[in-house]
Length: 324
Ligand SMILES: [Fe+2]
Ligand SMILES: [Fe+2]
Ligand SMILES: [Fe+2]
Image: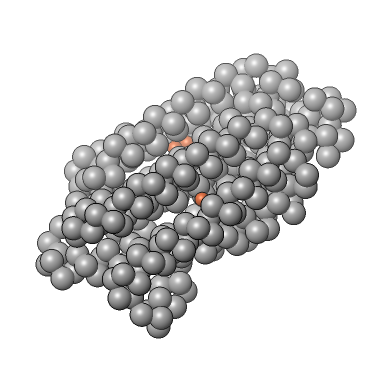
C-alpha cells in the first residue's frame, strides 16, 4: 500500500511538471498579446517564476525516480491534469488573455494544493513544502492579474468608436452565455462522476444557480436586441476562450475533477469581471450590476469546490486501494 501512495505522488508531480511546461509556452507568448506595458510586465515576471517552478518540480521528480528511463516515460505522458485544458485556446485580445491566464493560475493553484496533500500522505515533506511555496506564487500571480482587469479591458477596447462599444458589450455577453452553456454541460455530468460525495452536492447546488445565471444573461442579450441567429453563432464560437479541450481532458480522479471545476469557476469569475467593466463603459448599469452579482456567486462556488479538495483526494486514494 505505501508503494501505491508513492506512485500517486509521482503522478501528481508529473502532472505539475506538464502544467508548468504548458505555462512556459503560454507565458512566452503572453507579453506580445497583452496590449499594455504593465500587463506585459506581469506576464514577464511570472515567466521567470515559472522557469524556477519547472526546475523545482523536475528536481523533486528526479529525487524520487530511481530509474531515469521511467522518469522520461512519465514526463512524456499525454493527458494528465492540465495538459490539454487550454492547449487549443488562442486568446485574441488582452481581456481574453487575462481571463484565460487567471483561470490557468487557479488550475495551477489546485494542482499544488493536491500535490501538497498527496506528498503529506506519502511522507515526503520536501515535496509538500515545494508544492506549498509554488502554490503561493500562483495565488499571488492570480491576484496580480485580477488587479489588472481594468487595464486589460482598456487595452481591449481602446480605439473603438461608441458603436463598436455596444457590439463589444454584446460580444462579452455572448461569451458569458457560451461559458454558462459549458458550465451546464460540466455540472450535469459531474455529479455522476462524483458519486454520493459532498462534492457531488456542491455541483448539484451550483447547477441550479447556473441555470438562473444563464437565464439572466439571455435576458441581457435580448435587451440589446441580439437576435436568435446571431445568438446561435456566438454559442458555436464558445466565447473565444476555448473550453472545448476541457471536456476532452477526462480527469482520472475525483480530486482532479474538483481541480478542473475550480479553474473553470475562475474562468467564469474573469468573464464576469470583464463584462462588468465593458458594461459600465457602455453605460449599461443593469448588465454591470448582474455581472458583479454573478461573479460573486462564481467565487463562492469555487470556494465550495476547493473545500472538497481534501475529501475528494482521500476518496480517490481509497478508490484506488491506497490507504492514506
Ligand atoms: Fe506555475
Ligand atoms: Fe503560474
Ligand atoms: Fe459557475
